[in-house]
Amino acid sequence: QGQLVESGGGLVQAGGSLRLSCVASGTIFSISAMGWYRQAPGKQREWVATITVRSLTNYADSVKGRFTISRDNAKNTVYLQMNSLKPEDTAVYYCNAKRRGGGLTINNWGQGTQVTVSS
Image (cartoon, rainbow, N blue to C red):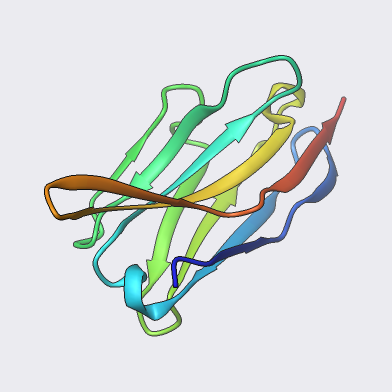
């Protein structure tokens, strides 16, 4: 329960595209807002994008217009389509599931997938 598994990272040249996927257990996916975070070397983890249960989306200014988050409820999967990648997008990308339970906010995290953008 609460397992998140990311895939799709890799090495790409600047200007290229990648699509990240995150499969979540069905018990949490349907009741969670899903998000992507990233952490570059020597920096704190930062929020990238969120999609709510009702598929409302929100993006960090740094990725707005280049990244698209989506969810497939039938597959318990959230995606992050990343276009026009820049070297500063290089980071480990983490999938997050956020839900309320017992008056608390509960977060689940994936193991992370590396994205490297070469200049």
